[in-house]
Image (tube, rainbow, N blue to C red; front, side, top):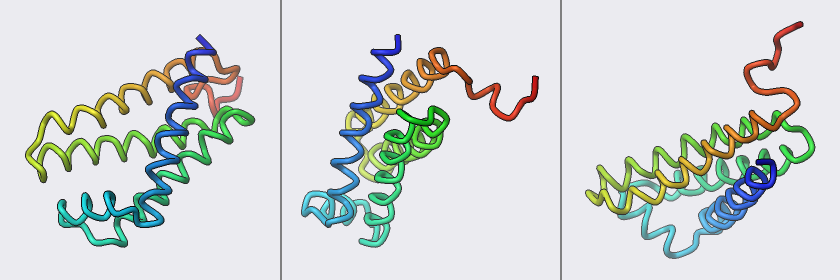
Length: 128
């Protein structure tokens, strides 16, 4: 289970690292997507910064396990927001499926992390 969790975590790092940097540098396909949704450029850059923050948190999670939860929380919000944008603003439910699959990937990674972690999230801050 730990290997599966690590693979899912690495995939999320690669996915959100690539797309986050693409948004920050203003890749033409990202600009056109955000423009089509009616969002300003600063919102695209902000989204990219949140994605890169999630990546940093997931990387930190390899050394300090609790950091995974912050990255997963950010990714959950981003993927649900992306799914809503595709379904509502674009009117394309099939395009909303990809962010929902990534949302499920993220959830599975958190579930596996919680099962394999020495200190699961529900025990954080609780004294024994």
